[in-house]
Length: 171
Image (cartoon, rainbow, N blue to C red; front, side, top):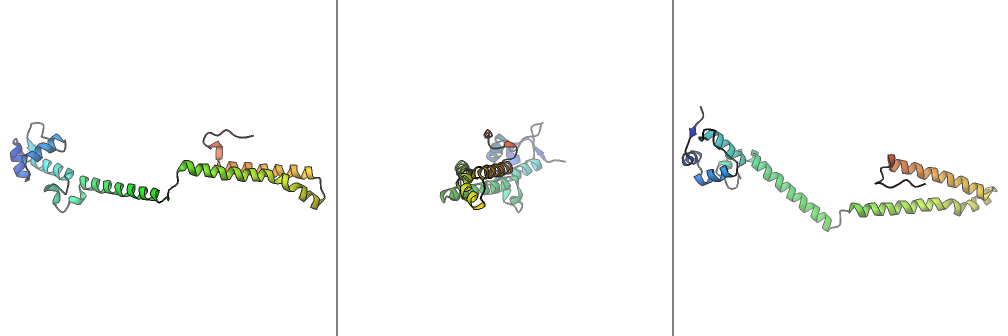
């Protein structure tokens, strides 16, 4: 049978806390009276222990205080602060890249390489044609066709199904 009392002061005395602590916990929604207005001492002790700050509450200072939801929340909060500080330090030391800047740099490198490949047949087809003794224009056309196929294949591999950020396909 649960241990019940209608008095907040009596509940506080049985729990070993002040009646002010009971009032504050009730206002904060950490504990609640039974429907009939009485305090269930065991239930109230359990709720206070689960939600108590181990650094401030005599109820949470027991051996199991590390396993309370409040203690786990404090550990998670500390871990988030440490992670935020680590990210801030990495940003200060320029270990992090801005996604927009990185994408712009990659686009610049890719377009430079693409332009170099597209211009290569025009630069070398005359020299190769002289060595092979073939028509320079025909050789340049064949080389350009193969370079275009290579670039199309690479574009499909790096950007399948046109996922390239809303860019329209180039002819």
